[in-house]
Length: 183
Image (cartoon, rainbow, N blue to C red; front, side, top):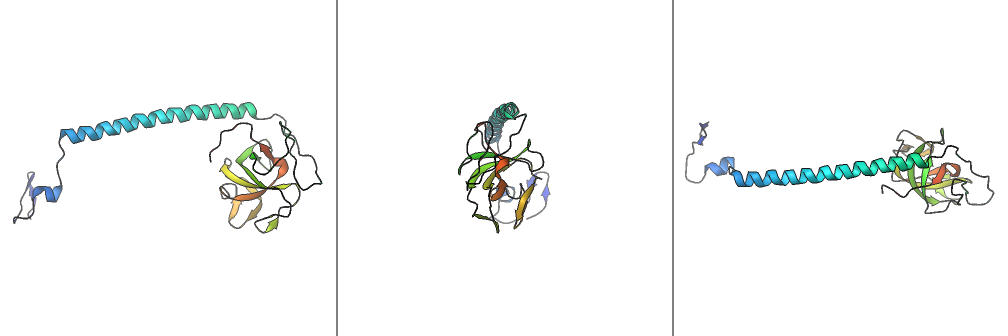
């Protein structure tokens, strides 16, 4: 096979053709079909992006509207379960979807998750849970740099523990006030 000169293939022998070397040169019809598919996909993605932006804006409005000005504290409890006195004054229970507040600024939500356990004899990592603590499965980390109160294994921050269970104080877990979750 020789060098390519002037758009022609200088080939030697009977078995190799120009299409075998450089492939088929597409005509207008396949090019137009490919371009129209890309344009349809692009329009679809732009519509999805607009919908997601609208959802995000409504979530932000709901979050701003539901942020309490005064954060209530948990009542001290001698029983085996935690009670949380938030806006709905419901008892914290296993399976409840909760927002997890910061250890240092209880008005900041650092993650969302679900309560997995309230029994003080449960072990999370290598430590017993203890009274007024709950085992929480972290669904979505919001403040990725927030330190865990009880780091274990390789989990040091909320972001590291995303998708795992951690121990968290009951007075910093609040029932979600809206039902939009990223699971």
